[in-house]
Length: 169
Image 1 (cartoon, rainbow, N blue to C red):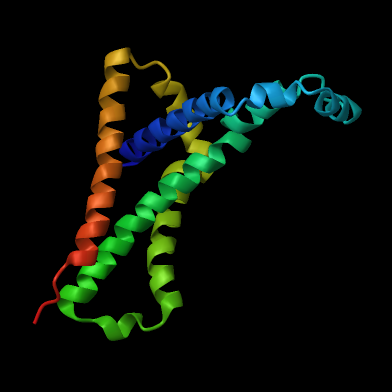
Image 2 (tube, rainbow, N blue to C red):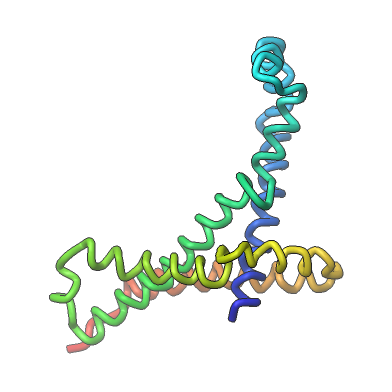
């Protein structure tokens, strides 16, 4: 289970890094960081190459770049718990249990945060998995990218299924 979660997280991270570099090209971020007043400002605070610093902060595995994929992954797990809760509520008709919106939110977010802490963040487990996964062949990378895309598609399908799930009468 831990390996599967870390595979999904790794592929999400790699997609986020590629998306970052794509947006750098599309939105002319490189040109922005080469503006004279931007370069002057960054030199004043002790940064020689602002674009390199920006890219390092957005793609660094240990510090800044890991937060966006973490949020994406936690959100997907939250959607799974939300969908399951919604189906259970409709099928078993336990709506009175979730009249309190904070309890409903807690039932979705807490398990997903627990999964993240236990399998990914605790003692930076993901870094050791990332080192293993960086050695994948192209065939393995393709396989796990497809599995991750299927995972996110299934999360979306489960979410919509739970909305249209018929209550038990």
